[in-house]
Image (cartoon, rainbow, N blue to C red; front, side, top):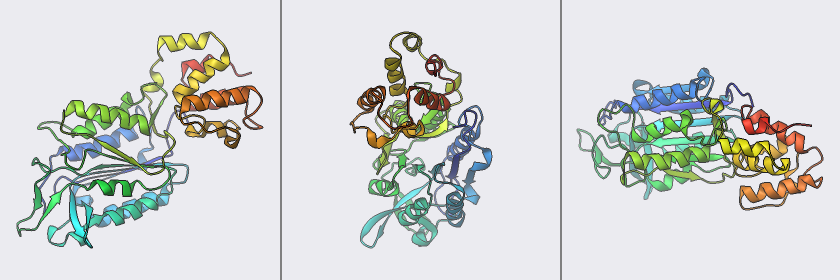
Length: 366
């Protein structure tokens, strides 16, 4: 991985506050999109290439434009890339063929003709399935109710009304597939809060802090998907006590994959006690402790074992990362684990991923 940029990162961010025919939302919705985009593209934070970060806000966020931009994202993203899709605006719950469905409302949505002027869950799921990246993270912040309680309805002047929000069973549908995950701003019976005078919604306030380094608690230099959600799920209830709890959905997700660089973390030293551990003791034990910290899901995390020349089929399966690393390194020490992996190749691969990690720097490659 390139230590100075995350050119494999791609993002599409959509936000609608000023709907043509539906109640408006606070301006913070637009700030959310612009601030997340700026953070992803910043060389001081996530280091995406600016050209890879696309935003659609208000008048540009039509149904046609959103679907077209999803197709364009799918066309430019490769298998080994990372893709993020962010939507903030109104969602609505509708009855479709005797089943409850959820739709995203674009700026031109019309409640009188909602099925033809919104994006259904089937359309969104199909669009996401065309994105072939091994790592896809979707953010949905569609439980705003314009300042009213979430139980209130979306209405227009002609008397058409729909329940505001997004149905929880649809979230799982959007996260189907290997390497796919979804984060939603709140539970289905809650409102995604925007406090008066605040620049950002509560959810995006936590998301931005996480992307700007707070989610990388080990100063690894990467923002990883599980770490990011863990941070958000802890912070949002602090900002909006008892009223908002983000949710996470994943169908087949084993790896705590990176979604961005943490350039701030690369400048942050590790804990003094960890530094001391790296300076003394058996080098195999030191390496094990470091790898558990940097790759908490085990040798499969970030495909580090394979990239170091190892063969995962030579390793035994373990239910947690710590046990997996202990067994893998014991196998490696005995000459197993693959024909092309050794102590030095494993350290070298980890150093490429975490070039500024001071613990790794103290381990010698023979």
